[in-house]
Amino acid sequence: MSGSRNATRSDSRPAESGASPRGRYWRLVAICLGAGAVFAVLFYLWGRELFPRAAGRWGSTFPFVGAVALTLAVALFLSEWFGFAGREVRKVRLAARDFLFLCSLALLLFFAAKAVIDLIAEIPSLGRGVPTRVYAYLIPLPAFAMVVRVLINSETAILFTVAASVLSAAAAAGSWPALLFLLLSGTAGAARARRIPYRYRMLLAGVQTAPVCALAAAALEFSFHGGGEALWAGIFGAVNGLLSGPIALAVMPVAESTFGYASDIRLMELSGTGHPLLSRLMVETPGTFHHSVVVGTLAEAGAHAIGANPVLCRVASLYHDIGKLGKAQYFSENQAGAANVHDALSPGLSRAVILSHVKEGVRMAEEFRLGDRITEIIEQHHGTSLLYCFLDKARPMIQDRKASEEMFRYPGPKPKSREAAIIMLADAAEAAVRSLSRPGPQEVDEAVTGIVNRVYLDGQLNECDMTLRDLHAAGRAISQVLAAVTHSRVDYPASAV
Ligand SMILES: [Fe+2]
Ligand SMILES: [Fe+2]
Image (cartoon, rainbow, N blue to C red; front, side, top):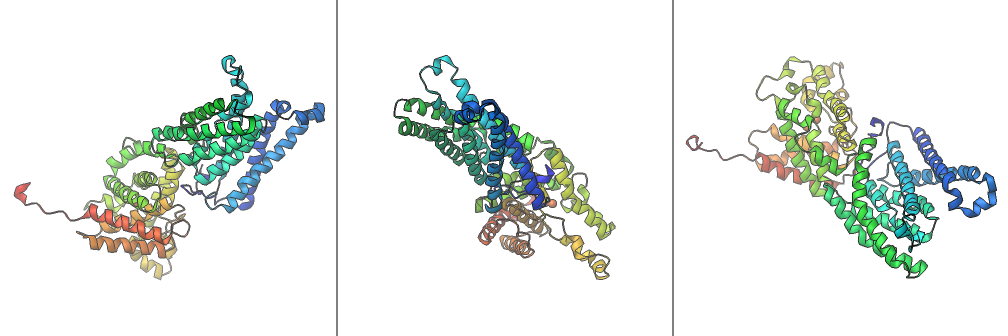
């Protein structure tokens, strides 16, 4: 998964920065050809049934000629559709892993569509009075569109809905009502799957999708085939909507473990202090744990202020410094008045230890399968910023040209999402205010403003979607919460204790 990690999500998800454009193109073509080939197999199995006219014209060579033609057509469609969107739509930057996931889902949906239409018709009590075409309203596209929105983003969910509707409509013999219903129901499902931190919210999204699906199915049936089966169509549409929540909940864990995604539900599970990494952080590096909790509170407030994802901000903050485990004494928050170990180290050695916590954090996140979103934020939370605390100590070396200022920068990458940028600000602000003795609201505000200006002028926010308005709003929210958290307490008289 590390290859696709530079792709960012949240709500924004850039492509792999490591691969060349040519390499990405050929990988995309290979995946699309693979997906097309699977469709060709499906075509070989059911082609005669789905395309009777072509089957009659080509005779015995039909399955082979049709399979090749369909492979090319599906591959071309997928690569053009997702390739164009990937280049031109800002929030659609799909990595190879995402293409694989979307193509797998589209194929799974095709199978599900075929199963719905073929198998349910076999059930004697149902199959008697209801024509087969009505079963198309049970094709579970709303559930799949919800999964794509929750695991990737809304822009990709719309693209997926259109592509999967076109492909799955083939299972319903390419009928117009089926295609229109799939487009509408998929969009309705994706639209209602916004911010799902709890399972019941997914079920609720399905319940809210059901009336739209029911109305759409009944209206389409009425307008294309008269009112005879409109009631059945409405019932099937409603059942489809109601089942979309449970189906999405069943598909999501499989997708998360196979493709390395992390939904908000998974993030909520990770936020419990029972996770082995958080337990270790709490026991072995209590200073870092406390710092992470405070950064989480600040980042959550910053996210609320600009409409970013607060759950992601809070949970990723808890894990952002896990790379410090095992090296607690090298980080100021864990020294608690003890001698500073860096006094005995050269600036170069100190630099190596401090910089390594990012790489080590990424390694641990991958080992513990924390998911792509947390791993990306761990990797980006210092961007390419300078290690200011050792820069002064290293000045003589820099002047003697034995070192350069660039050596005292984190390796990056810079934050690619607003959530990563907020955590970078909250992290730096917490550290800056911690170094103040008895800070009041005024001092906290000045320190946070200084951090915001420094991060912005250093170009650390050049690769994310943060606007200046967002930056000021997030900075203000962080400052307010930090002032409340660090306000000077009223001193109790000793006798009162
Ligand atoms: Fe850090
Ligand atoms: Fe930190």
